[in-house]
Length: 405
Image (tube, rainbow, N blue to C red; front, side, top):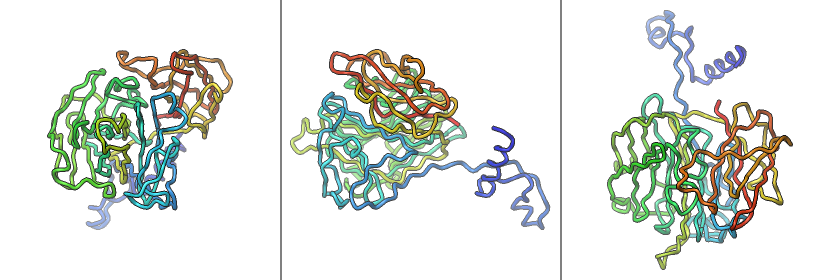
């Protein structure tokens, strides 16, 4: 960054109240007559906040520039259209128990009545991940991730989780089960809802090896009435050496413990919704809708996200364009399936698409995998190609470009 750019940045921080400059009198100096004292620069911690503000007259598809929205369904016959389901909120955004029918990928994440919904039904395996363009930063101690979410669960096979993983270790589609995808990130912390009840545990991954932090197995049903319309606050406090997760309004925490040093102190934050044949094993079960609101990450560190103009590419539609040119030191990010996947940038030479680091025990032809590779600065057009596999043709989706500042 040039000297001019540094001066502009300092001025912006000063005028916004985020920065004390050395020539400003301290509060003590003002109180004692204004004698000038030189103080060190103090930058207030950056807090990321998302309130999902909006009151559309009908459910409104949500995919803003500062969030990555990834929607996945495993079975080949659902790659272009999801299984229909009754998603909560009516066609006029009337509250639950009113519903409306969805089947398009773009309908799976939507806005109504000043909050956000995720809704997906997958007889095979499906998931949604919402990722803001801010890392959680606990390099200075403990950081806090808070989110409000509904508590009525439609099926034990429909659940939520949160992943925190280092920028270069994160996976676009992390999963701790062998039914789909390519397993967990190399290093990560996962907060996951249990498949047998409405309580949570925490898993710490180190070099792909999980350590489950068992906590209290008390479901939240014991101290609240599950509701599709009321959104309760969940809170994760994380440092390199401690984890605490629970519901602060009820003074209840499933996990509150010290851990061995993670060895990393900033992470991508992914909010997940999973659907694994939710109608199975329960005559009254149904595909679920989760209602989200008031997400905060404190402290946070911003990074760049650039979306592609298409949700997917395939043999018939093999190219995307970016909303703006790729910056320096950026990475191309997408989920893909099929052998010999290749990319080329702005009509250049074809090159193999590079996988993110995966646990090879999970590699299967029928699983989508997470790709993560350098992209030259200035690129605006990306083409893809690949070969067929035994279950279908190649396919890639949820394409974007990320870059750290």
